[in-house]
Amino acid sequence: MSDKKQIADALRGLADNESAMDVVEKQVEKYRLDLLRPVYKDRDELIGRVPSFWMVVLSQHSNFANFIRASDFKYVDCIDDVRVEWDEANPGNFSVNIKFHGLEGDFPAQSVTKRFRLVKVKDDMKVSGNDEDRESGDDDDEEEYERLLSDPVDVEWPVAYDSINPDKIQDKRASKKEYRTGMKTLFGWFRWTGLKPGKEFPNGESLAELFANDLYPYCVKYYIEAQRDLADEMSDSDNDDSAEEPLELPSDDDEVQDHSKKRRLE
Image (tube, rainbow, N blue to C red; front, side, top):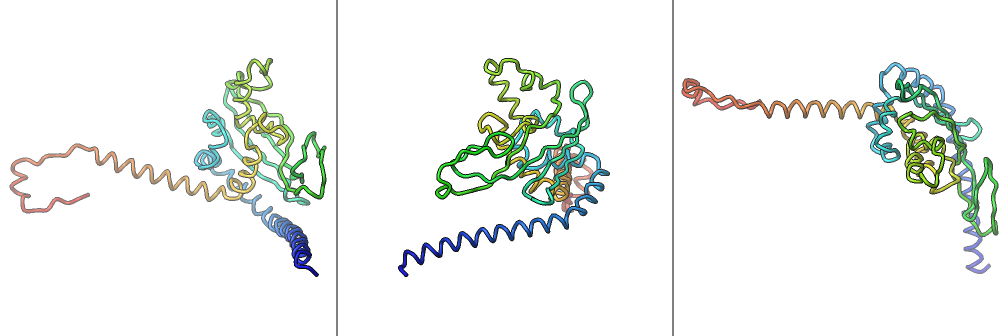
């Protein structure tokens, strides 16, 4: 057997081994989520007793702010609950449920669930429609990979966003700037499909993964860190206030009496 054939056989064997590892990793992830499901349920109930829990977590998370517009935080503060649920048969598929309380005259209370599914595509594939309507070339030459897709979800936008709400923009060509601005908001993310790069919410897949892989699993850690940071800021503020207090000059009598004493530093 030639060296080239040995190497080719070894590489094919490694590819098969990688596929086997992927299968095992998915089984391990499924088992992990099965164990965590009742734990998450109990945690969700406890979180519901903590006022403004999700407002604190989302407002203080260093990465979440990179996905939305600054004006969205007015409505992020309306988020009372966030829950992620994974499909029991395929943990790669999951849903994100966000519950908002309302703002009178501007934004209605609502609960919105957005579902995501993991699909396999090839480098030269174009995915369209609700399922995988694909056009491919030579299947043997293209590497297969996975990506998230979703369907648009109905969500009621704030009245304050009427000018950038895609559903209320009659002429999208004339109002292209407003349309694009609206699609970059948190509410634009609910319309994200993964099928129209450059024409919908940017990095929609990454925001979905942030909820599923980081924000929801580690929300308690982020809440504790945010509270600690807030306490440190308040402590620093108190120290700054003390430093700005005017210095009291001693009287002549005090100078004579305390001249030999060292000044105590507070």
